[in-house]
Length: 388
Ligand code: GAF
Image 1 (cartoon, rainbow, N blue to C red):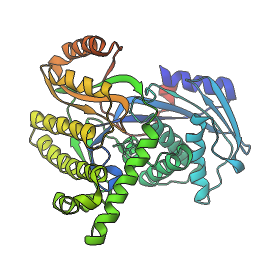
Image 2 (cartoon, helix red, strand yellow):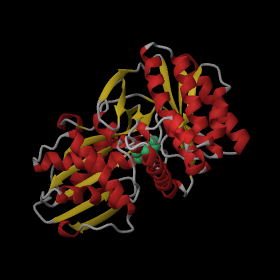
Image 3 (cartoon, rainbow, N blue to C red):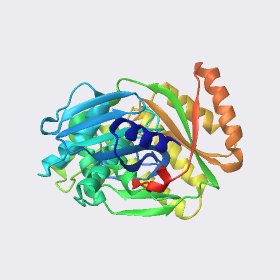
């Protein structure tokens, strides 16, 4: 088992016993690019996870080891700064957040490794940030609540990875609940767990295998475009604090001033928020077919108006739409590559996977990787007896 290998690697390398923490990646059923606009999202933590073995070492140094990359990194804790070793930036970004709160981080050793595919839109970075934040909080006895840890992990992403992300990924990793999706209001931070039975309707991820280099620069640009839209609307409607408050009527009334691009970005966000609320109702009604239609509409908006899709994602959604037993399909996460998320009736999963793999190869000459995921709980400690 992977977590045992991570724990063993820690013991071999550092010669003391670690705390073992599991931090999951996430899926998002619907509500994309709405989190940083104060809107709604519907994510869930999944069984793709990163394991952390962490222990205090009595020094003032952090000794880090990436099990997957077989790379070590050391830093004096008084001097954590961002540099070109990207994987270490995520960890140092978390340390910096403790320090910003006036908390002294003692020297520690850390080995981490997992099975969240990198660049697949499953939030491996949030899992890394949340896993270390949780482990350090435990070892330092700081007792920060999960919401605080989520905000710290998000700030690590902003300041050490350079992506101005919303809170969805970190929230999902820390607040996941087995067999439930989370309906999160990203403005009030109120949330509700909605049952989702993956033994009836499977969640199948289709990995395009591509990650276009645009991903982080375009992500930050989308965020700016949304802020521009809000700034214009605020001149007329001071109550519009974020796109969550805006209406289509307001956007249409100022379409010319907004300009074509900003108008379409804002319109997508306003419509996507409606779709998440509608999807939640469909889920409560047990109407997966209607839920799936919201997913297809979400994809169309992301492709045509928000413009964060790419050919590989569009082809996969098109393939899925033609398969029996598929309720809905759409790109997931920031975009420009990564995975599509597909809701598929359990008895159709095998044929869906086979057909999608064949067709993806036929259209684009590319190999498709697929994962059938289950929904799990959020970040937690693995009991020592499981480690042995
Ligand atoms: C990325 C970000 F990290 C999230 O905060 C969210 O904005 C998502 O893209 C798009 O919905 O995963």
